[in-house]
Image (cartoon, rainbow, N blue to C red):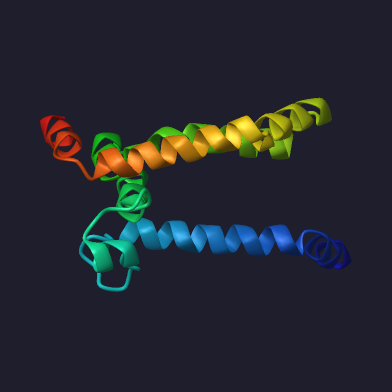
Length: 140
């Protein structure tokens, strides 16, 4: 009993974060954001009528949890493409050696990398609101 209390105190933050993440995953798995009124709607789309780079992420998460990758790609292609990079960064952060952690951190926090990501997001924002992009997605 004493050992369990010690472990809980030592890893309390990780346990709480894990429980919250599992609850979020369960919500996105069981409730479809496109059919539920409880999910947050995009304020930019509500005001301007244009999609932001994050529009469709909630629906894409729901589709990815059901292993419908093509449908998730249709909702938000940039999110689906960026997921492997995010998973890689998390794996390096938690399981990588110190030299690898420093290398990845330097690469992703470098000015050029940040500028490149901003350019990619901006180009995606512009493309996502074109008819060409929507026609391409309907052909998939």
